[in-house]
Amino acid sequence: MTYQRVLLKLSGEALMGNLGYGIDPKVVADIAQEIKDVTNHGIQLAIVVGGGNIFRGVKAASAGMDRATADYVGMIATVMNAMTLQDALEQMGIPTRVLTAIAMQEVAEPYIRRRAIRHLEKGRVIVFGAGSGNPFFTTDTTAALRAAEIEAEVVFKATKVDGIYDCDPKVNPNAHRYESLTYSHVLTHDLRVMDGTAIALCKENDIPIIVFDLSVQGNIVRAIKGEKVGTIVRGLCDVR
Image (cartoon, rainbow, N blue to C red; front, side):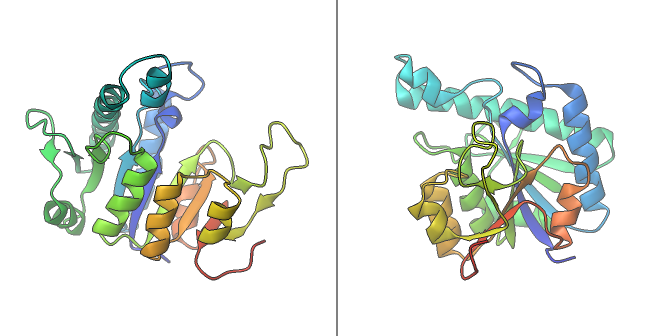
């Protein structure tokens, strides 16, 4: 395996499948099966999950809600997703711990960096909930931050598209999909695969980012094996 410790970023939208809102149990079960395949290879896996399938803080703020309050509500939504994913994983026999940046001791452990690393070393999957615990930061930034803290070798961003394009492929059928990009190119051209803060954090800590389609079965394992899946963002490389 190319990578031994991986941070997987899942959007909340990934959990709702084709539903307009909420959580699709079949999609969650499929994701859990993918994760089981990863853990069967002895890979240490941490997950950051979003909450956009339940509540989007930015959208609520644009409608007049206080931005900080909206973001806190969004963080709570990520915990709901994290607990749902934990249940699906444990039903498959995968020991899992939810760690939250906002104290919720009745349902999850508080995030403590050393505890998170110890869980990984013991073969447990960890799911980070409640974002970074701070408003005005996205779960993309949380993914980059937690990856640096636990010394993950790579960030996988699992999405509904098969990589990074120079423009929206749904709008332009001639959109070009990149195989590899530098952090600087992503920032300079505002490609928006992750927010600028997340890209900058990965750049500063030399953590590559691989963006791929979650709906293709086996993509997570393929990416861990180092196969060409989606688009990779890293330091020095040719933009292709």
